[in-house]
Image 1: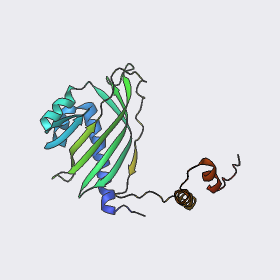
Image 2: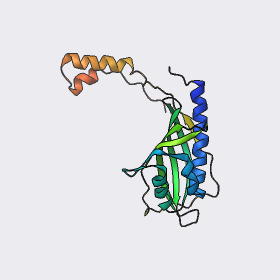
Image 3: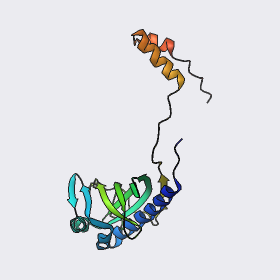
Image 4: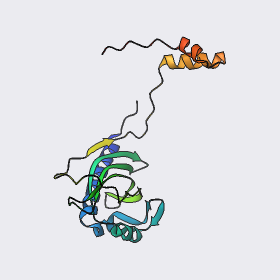
Length: 193
């Protein structure tokens, strides 16, 4: 079983704080995001690549006012000091009024170590929301987002032995007829409802 290193856990917590600050700044003062990007930063906005902090800031400030409610940050340590972050939640386009459009939001960030000891945005992938699909008004208060730390390496669980035996028997027989496969399949346990 893979384990998360203590230093990776610390970097993931720092990444979470960075992302909370990022969205707070995005919603209230987008011009303040300029120091969170570098000249080598890249924003992929709906398949269009935008390079450099000034060009990225110009794109972000051209978007309509938004309010984000983040449901979950998924952080995975990546290369030395970097963290890959997937962000899930809702975005209300048009601010916090009752006529705002609530849309599902999903962004991915590659956060790079910054000289100040925090992070900067190395790469951001943003598939923009559709502005003409009205959902619900924003809630009166923000819920606390959940935080999920993903292991650096994961391995899928092995298949059950019965599946391996069945697969091997079918391959050895050279037939895949349903009658033959069902004859080899282990009996299913009766459901007790």
